[in-house]
Image (cartoon, rainbow, N blue to C red; front, side, top):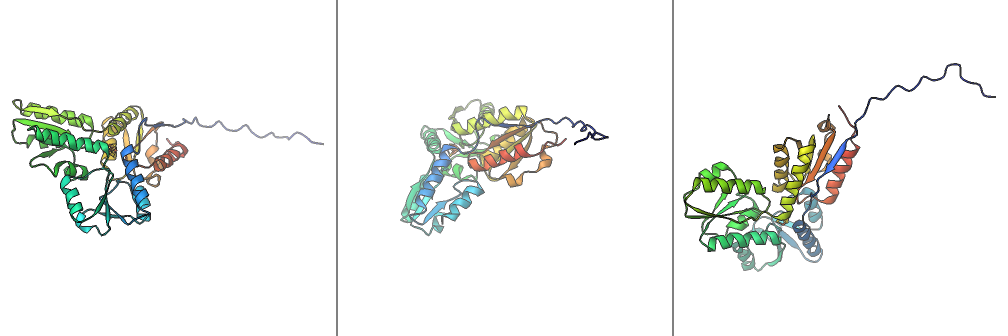
Length: 300
Ligand code: SF4
């Protein structure tokens, strides 16, 4: 026969109110079609022939490791290639560089993104039409070298100071590295017009659509998130630009390469966390970061 306990257990203490964390995944994020195509091409060729990639196929350590595991070699100079086949990355190459590779008898696998090709055509057309090419981008980036190496004269600009250093010309033709924020391109083109009011300034918008989509989507989440986590290679230009855009719009920003870089302390007091990723970040890396963000306990 059961009996009632003399002292029933005290009621459970009230739990402190916990605020569920919202993780906002950017509407457009992560790997673009150009990088996906280039990786697929490299992985298709690697098992059948020794392959050297000319430069980093993507600025992402996870993808690079996968390629190196397949026996792919990476070299930055044509002269250093020791396999019969060499691959041009999605970033493209100048005609001069292609000719150098062909002169060495190399078979070329060309993974140049069609949108980089369009940027090459735009810069060449500007030069042919008598405009002095001004490329908005990172001077030492492989894509910018490809865009400019065939030109007799050009300038590369990234800052207002760079515009102040330009010599007067009758006609300027502005184009951009495909992964530059379009706002920067418009701003610098505007400054160029102000600085040389008598010059004709023609602007070709060569920023690619996937970059624009990721930039706008990052801006949207930066406006409503307390913290934004940006996933991508530390040397990836477009990933760094995403982080800079989010920081400009007031979010606390953390740039990670993988989930292993995340720290719980970053999320202290953050009810809403935004998530975005650069165009060379693999889906599985983004998904792992998202799982971690959702699982990390809420702390004050
Ligand atoms: S970032 Fe743009 S230009 Fe570069 S590979 Fe991707 S789609 Fe092509």
